[in-house]
Length: 318
Image (cartoon, rainbow, N blue to C red; front, side):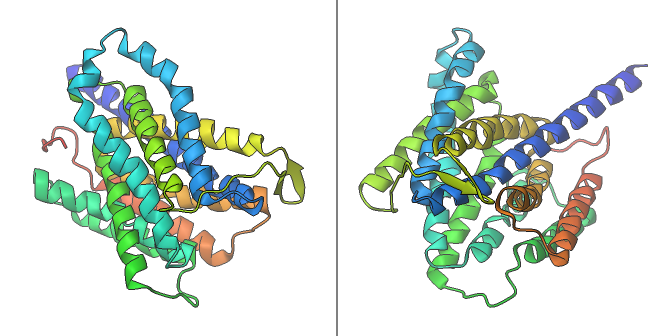
């Protein structure tokens, strides 16, 4: 009976983790099409992301205050974690990606950044002794091939060494996002980690725009999606509430249940969600090759899940 209860709890935790991970990936996947509409209306990518991040911080702050329940000492104890999250996983990742796309095609920059799950696997192996199984390696290979097909980077790409270095820095930031999400120091609520990191990351992005590190421009022109114009603040509100506040909180919840390795691979479904939203909002229908790539990504996630340790097998926790 004890074993059955334990297995039931573990199964419920897995299902909840996968649900949170898919919700997070879908929310993040909506950001590209929404930001594309804003940029076509005159917004710079840095301005759109900075406002998105700060709006999410505003939305999450009341929830974070409730989550602390007066335990304000947690902020002091976990200040290094929140600082690393804001500087590396939020601001650093975004700034590196902006600089990468200044030298590379967007598809190539995304491909490099989305190798983050491989970096997570390597970190867990080197730092925590979690040697990847053959199924994990197979899942990584399937995921990377799927990304090549979905992002369509094989046709007429240009490569810049500087751009690749920036994209690799973005990949480090993305990998740090999953590794830091899994840490639950002193019982720090996920809403507090997200809100603190987003406040800090948003402030850094504003400073970067102010000093000219990245272009910073805003506009109040209507935003057009597949021939339909909407007020500029509607997609901006959706960016902040859905693609940042909801996406970050559910991403943290998913990683704390699944672990950074599996959560990072499930997050690859973000590119599949982005294809769907680009089709619905921008009229950009995915091709057969992209759909096949999406299938390979999902196959890679399944392989990684099957490669996770079975019930009762003990591994170090990241």
